[in-house]
Length: 257
Image (cartoon, rainbow, N blue to C red):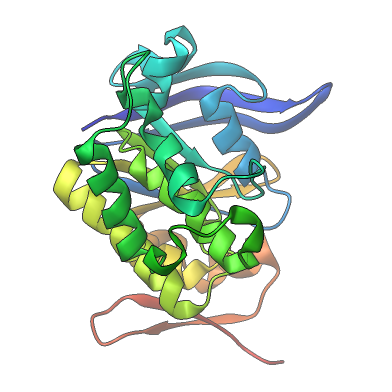
């Protein structure tokens, strides 16, 4: 169980600043959904949390600055699934997902039965068991996406960062993935940060939303406070209606002019 704090986090590439002055707190076991129009800095924010891009400000996990952690400790603290991953050549699905267990092994250790059980459970929940022995190169785009997410989930880090995890997934697999993430929160106290284009899924799964626009926080709070017609019209230049499912969850529906 881990807390996550962002303190005046700014980040960018070379001389270009993409996100500026982002501050947020995510309680242990919380779920923060980062939303915003294209180019608003969502992916850059996640990369800054990991120290993958130039940044200023601080990222704290359980009160410890991420930049001060050793690589192994950082991997135990934060798991990450990028939107566009680079997959190694020659590995099977199981081999690749097992890489997520590496931070938990001793320097010369090998995976044990508990590690294999963790991987098997994740593969089963993400409907990947039938591909366990398949080379990564033979997978479809959606299957590769689920495999990358499986590795991050198998890592069992205290904080889990997922960049557009439902991209390329059909609605059933998208729901299965987000359900599994929600189960990890309940079972392990995993703290979750996801970027999501799908505002309906963001509003139905995340406890709080952080809306970025032009690299700055435009709105932050519970989904009902952020996903309003006035906010979405202003920030997305969109015509939408906010509908409700039987349990009261929001559905963002486009409205034809």
